[in-house]
Image (cartoon, rainbow, N blue to C red; front, side):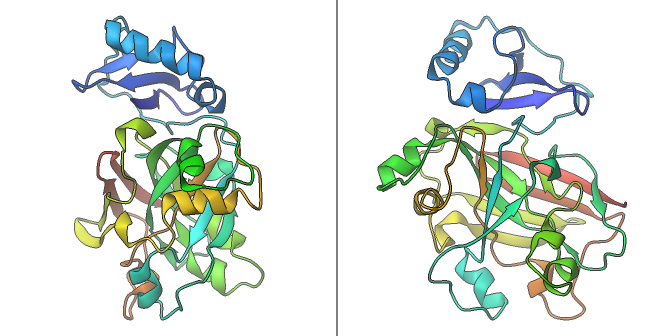
Amino acid sequence: MKLLRVGPMGAERPALLDEEGTLRDLSGLVPDVDGALLGDEAALDRVRAAVGARVLPVLDGRGLRIGPPLARIGKIVCVGLNYRDHAAELGAPVPAEPVLFMKAPDTVVGPDDTVLVPRGSDKTDYEVELAVVIGRTARYLRTREEALAAVAGYAITNDVSERAFQAERGGQWDKGKNCETFNPLGPWLVTADEIPDPQALGLRLWVNGEPRQNSSTAEQIFPVAWVVRYVSQFMTLYPGDVINTGTPAGVAVGAPDPKPYLRAGDVVELEIDGLGRQRQELKNA
């Protein structure tokens, strides 16, 4: 299933995109698309049954904003340097274990919402990534099978970063990762049954129509199942938590000087196979 949320910011309603590409209203069946829904197999079965019976009302999507496909996100765990080509472009060694950091849930915006260039920024960067959405409580997972069973679905995320704040202002990476609007998510949360192999997805990103990133999740150093199992050794994962699994080569910080960092007026577009497409225009905060 392709689950999404549509409507004005802060007042989104749950919806579903069916196999014919028709937008269907879920608000009469479930309160929202969130961890409570994803962790309730009976509720998901009711949604599947309604889809099969073709009883969900049609929504007119014309002019309708698409919001983040997941409400009330618990936490966002991010993986740094998880693509071999990205480590190489930065001249960084391949890490022996995943580099983990966190982003605040309030960085999340819709897939086509405006991204704000922070005040004082001159190194705002883009990062197309596969987001993993957790669907069941997971702690101390042991196997690949247990890890994948904990995944409710997948989405596109843009792990927007301010590199000077991240690397030149002291402390940890939080300063460059948690600026307002720095985590566009969506358009859809695609349930795991529709993505049989998360290690076979193409990722692409353009800035002002120019290709910048073009890779595959096959290039991940630590695959999705490995990452989910690994993270569960350090923290409990709950339904509605998100893991951003890293970005491939082609980011601005890895380019030759002058590095093509983002500026107000730039348009970033990104897509992942089977997960849809995003488009953001940048404006000054």
